[in-house]
Length: 433
Ligand SMILES: *Cc1c(COP(=O)(O)O)cnc(C)c1O
Image (tube, rainbow, N blue to C red):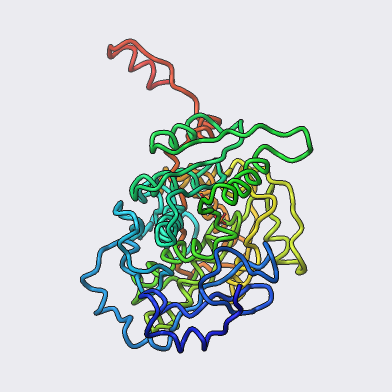
């Protein structure tokens, strides 16, 4: 693999394909070396730890990437063409990924005791989670590189978003899931036509998920499939970044003081943070929100490293908030860097606090998020009580996924009502009880 500096790419600009006119190269988050954008996954010197970050030509973009030039563009992630690592937007799914609404949740703001509370509802994406942003860029990149197949190992939103995006663009998807993956989640994959490989827990200590992950990595090599794995694939975080770009554009005149994001692998908060940094650099917003990263008590290795320093130590990975129950997060460096750069912080919440937040968001805010999707509210509550976020603050919570995809968490809290006779007397009795 060539090791080429920024200036090499810069000199070649004129003859490069369109996307490389704004994309300068890839920088390793561990050793800082800069590569030409022809590397498939991670840094050749640092291996799997060496996750890459995409660099763009902000100096030139500052002149051309202006609000008035975007006025007639589609309201989805295709809008941010120059800041995406792809060659044109034609290969992105046409299913309207992104440009999710931000709305003012003033009743919830007073419940939490803060001045303003905004919700960005990622459940409005085509497969009802934030992950659609990453999968969209993943399928575009796969086609651009000439792959007909794309694969990932996941039980959750990464898998369903990939299955949907692959279906929308005509790619074949193969998804590795642990044998015990819940049926509703597997059905979501099958309906999109994904090939689902259920992997058994091996006799040797590792979990069925880890076995699925390893098998997926090997299969991609053996069969020549594109690997949609956020941590090793630098381009996927660029898809997630569009959420930060949107927050800046949608709230340009008055960006919030804080943006709250739940954290599993760390790619989501890293992406949101990068989007906000870019929009400040391009002069769209004057002030940049601080990031509050929220982890679940049973799976908080990034928060631990954030406060204690040093290298990440894998932890347990148990939480009702399955989508963030990650014991060995792969993108912790990018996440911690993004939070520090924003002068933000992290907070850890219990499953009980998450379930309480889920009810509160639904009953007072009118938004039904999955547990990982609403963990941000639990973090916000704690941050206000502990004084980290002041009562005069304006805060935006990213609700990362819809609760409708899997109601198993809700089932644990709610009682199925008794059926009654279809007559008024029965109703009177029922309402009195
Ligand atoms: C994946 C996911 C997250 C966390 O994203 P990471 O990149 O793993 O930190 C949060 N919420 C939902 C709903 C998710 O699917």
